[in-house]
Image 1: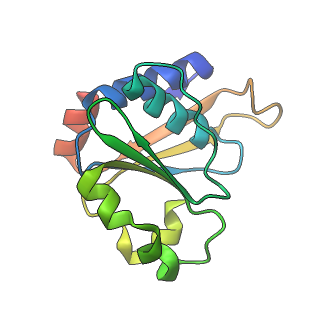
Image 2: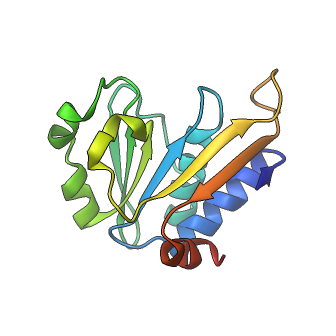
Length: 151
C-alpha cells in the first residue's frame, strides 16, 4: 500500500483505530524515519477522538493512553537489546487492558503475540523523510487483517 503523504498515514491510522479491540497487537517495523511513530500517533489520536499529545516513547519505552473506551499502550523497544527486559515493561498486562502498538518489535524475539499484525514501512526514495512517499506492507492472521482493515 502506498502512503503518498502524512494525510495518507493519518487515514491508515484512523482506519486501524476504528477497529482495534482489547488484546490487539500492532507491530511497526521500518528504518529510522520510516514513519512508525507518525502512524502510532495517528492511531492513538484517532481512537482518542482528539489531537492529544503523543510523544515518541523512545526514552520511556512505553506510554499508556487511557482513552474513551480502552487503553492503548505505545511501546518503543529501540533501546533494548532483546526480549530479556520485556517482562518488566508490562506487555502482557497492557494486552489484558487494551491494545498495544510496538515499534522495533524485533526486540520481542519469541514474545511476539501470535495474532499480531505487522506493518512494515519503507521510504520510496532517499531524501527528506517528512515529505517522502512511503510504502507499507501489512501482514498477519487473515481474520485479524479482515477485521482491522476490511481486506
